[in-house]
Length: 270
Image 1 (cartoon, helix red, strand yellow):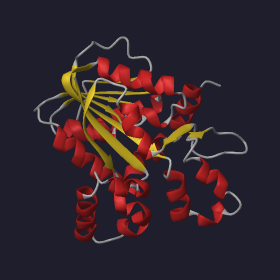
Image 2 (tube, rainbow, N blue to C red):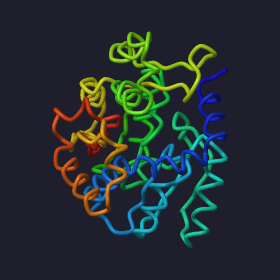
Image 3 (tube, rainbow, N blue to C red):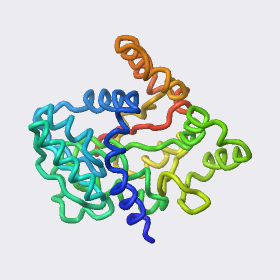
Image 4 (cartoon, rainbow, N blue to C red):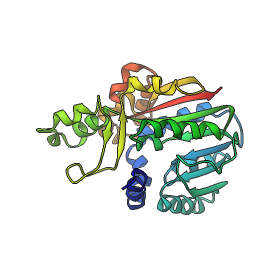
């Protein structure tokens, strides 16, 4: 079965859970929003959210007055995004099913900002990861900004230690292997999640240097709070906010990379 079909099937089945995911992982959500907000300088900007799932970020950006185009592999996710938009009295410029590898029908240089906050999680082929970034750059205006999210190779280790440490028994080698080989292929012996690629944080900058981009920053989205997420999520709002403030201020430090399950690269198209 093609990787795109495997991933689409997973998100068609789990689109509700994906909508709820950023409620459970609100540190990631809040820091990502801060980074995006701080880099959007245009009012009523044209923004494309490629692989944006059920539209958490798209709806937030639409609520700020931006003109958002949402594309995702999963038809169920797009349906949910449109439903949530209607419930919130918001609208997209367009929300449709599509593949990040196949953006040929989109007008070149149309968008002020482009988000890739998911597609590179699920492409085990470097050739396809490169093509996805190139496609996003093609539809981005000159000097437009690109936001690219990655799942860290440390993420499976952090997740297991945080949520189900007993699962590591007899399998520590498998978890450590992600640091040298980030491919995760689902099978009967390896169920759960879907096909994914976990990148070592030190490999993100070299990968992004392949493209006509000027780097703005590389940010740890959970940062120092990553291993303590469950505890931090349960704090009173004012304490939670202060913890997020601290993690955000340290998010560009490479010292925080190994604590973080997700990282976000921001660059400007040359």
